Length: 341
Image 1 (tube, rainbow, N blue to C red):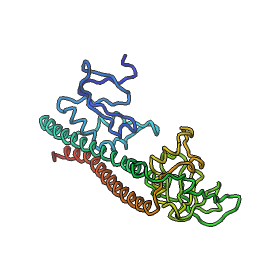
Image 2: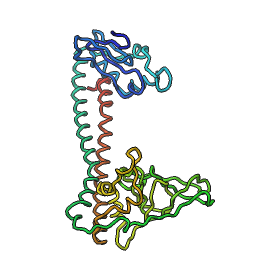
Image 3: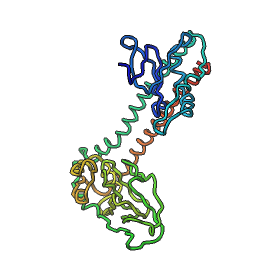
Image 4: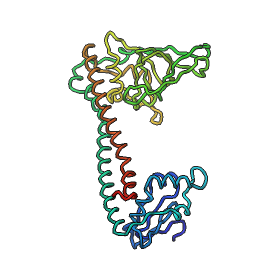
């Protein structure tokens, strides 16, 4: 019955031996076992505390980042299947204050670690809410009561597809800047990278864009990769390049609409295969946008820019807070085992 399993008993410390579980802290004290014993994966080392040490003290000790890093340095086995050898834990030296002191420190640690966990859960919930704000705000702008009063126009009346392409067979030459899907941040319209290229080295055709064009990632459109070009360059064949009729439309207003959930719903992107969704040129052109007067578009676009900048600052602050919280458990463990708790 026990064949192929690791036996452990109430109060044993389970230490995951295999990468990456070991580094990820997959270690625990076995408690509340039915009948006082259990069986688990063979990828656990079982540490059985003696009479002079509590399970909680051992568990907290091996959870210290320096222990996990040192254990990594002692891995054996092939890459991808590396494990901590049993001898490493056997020879690991653990400081042993009196049992009452171990128990006192364990209670303090548990209290502080639980507080960190609650704070992290709260910050994570706030971050998720912050990440949902842009889509909710764009829906309110482009499908709210005010927007319903604006006349509807086809995107084909607002955008013109730029069909200029650089092809290797034309033997182009000279430097250029390439901006692909991977260089555009989802949902925000920010460019997060680019790639210098020599056009004579191109192995495939590349659409051309110019400063002020809307470069739109039509592959996996739910990623909302819509960028207003800041300079002239080349993009991938998974992107459409559009010029905007600036006599009737503000390019910032139009690009925010194309990043909104309202656009995705109206564009019927679901008609494409689910495993590789894309929007065809005809579907983009047929999608309707509620278009107010040009002056109002500019005002709304500026308002959206300001709102998104505020949300971005909030998101960054919450991410920094989470980073700080992630570092607290290690700091608390270090204090505990250096006698500062």
